[in-house]
Image (cartoon, rainbow, N blue to C red; front, side, top):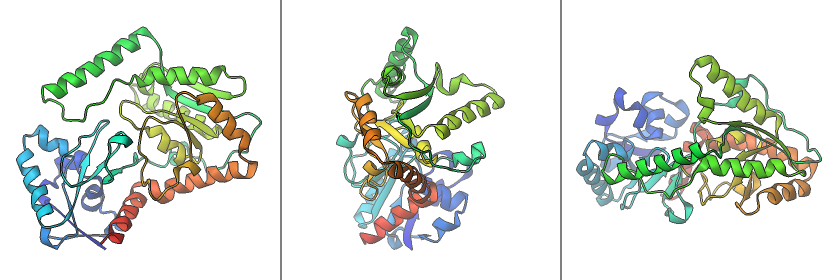
Amino acid sequence: MLKIYTDQQFIKPENRRCVFPLLFDLCYTKNEQLLSKYEMVAQMEDAVVVIVPLDISEYFQKKQQKWLFDYIDKAIALKKKVWVYTAGDYGLSLDKQVYTFRLSGFNSKLDSNTFIIPSFIEDPYTTIQQQFQPISKQLLPKIGFVGHASNSWSKWIKEILVFLLHNYNRWTKKLFTDFQSFYPSSIKRYRFLTALQKNNKIDSDFIFRKQYRAGVKTADDKQKTTQDFFKNMEVNPYTFCLRGAGNYSVRFYETLAMGRIPFVIDTDFRLPLNGIINWEQHCILTTDKNVCNSLIDFHKKISDEDFRKMQVNNRNLWLQYLNRDAYFSHICSIFKKNL
């Protein structure tokens, strides 16, 4: 078992939403699988890993930076490995010798002690009440997408205003995140999808939404749009994936969970468990300069058997590496190896 320590004063009901994800499983939901791998100790001195209990931006928002830095410095002085969690689309980097867990970031700017956390989602097949089955290869690559994509002037204006507002809030210390360059994701998404749609060597199955989740307001509408989303994924072997506000895609993980093949535009992201998972065996990574040809060439070269096998492997990848239990089990193994 890996011995961990955290400050229990922060483990209270009102902090459920911002607690370090592993601590949520250990302290709130009492996950038996993870409790068999991690041992909570009462003293920092007895731990191998010291965990900052909350998303680090919480300490900045509440003007508790001194507590945060004193806690980290004490653990480092004791030669402990320190884990910090930074939530949200952008994340926040610290100039400290810590291991950072975050959803997104830019691979070229992240150090080797940064671990990307998958988007922890429920099994989509539970939602649509179906069983996983791989799709056989057809003559043309069949790619699906349901989601927010628009090229309107109003969308341009909104994207620019949101970008400026975020920067203003960073400058005035109302928001504590890393800076990110302007990237109008819904507009970029529309342009890539339109190029795929116009290519007669590609069979596209796209549903464009003008708003995120089609702007649903009722539970019934949410259920319907969710069903539409996963049904589209179920019938298409490939799904188009592009980053959103942050440099990551929840859809990417949903595609893997469905046992389908993500077709992903590389925006200098880092993927989870990068040294353990050979991601080239599970998705198509392409640049924004070669979108259509990447899909066509991949589909042409892959055999019928490998096409079905890749879908099975992707479903198993999500089950064995990317859901909450599996991910933190592998993190445990990584740190135990380095003891």
